Amino acid sequence: MAIESWYKKDKERRAQGQSVFNYCLKNNLRVNQWYYWQKKSKQKQNDFVELKVTPASPLLIKSPRGWSIELHRDCDIDFLKRLSDILL
Image 1 (tube, rainbow, N blue to C red):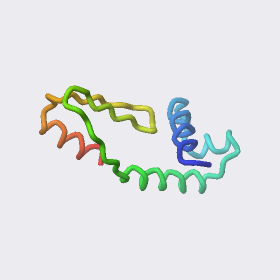
Image 2: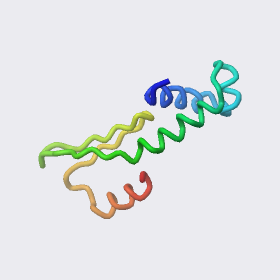
Image 3: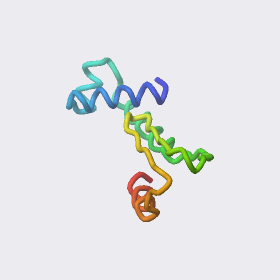
Image 4: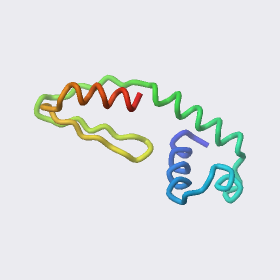
């Protein structure tokens, strides 16, 4: 299972409101593999990519988990600091 596949399965599991154990049982997945990929996903979250943004364009951040954030150039710096504390 690739990390992107795990994100998709985790999103599906959460939407169904199932526990990891029940989801794995229903979908013929091994629970220990599930937690392995969960750990890998947390490590991947710490990867950074350098971005170059022009002043006129908003910055769109998309998560592999399905959420996104659009930041405009007049975004408050204190808000960005609080957001980074939450996400990281």
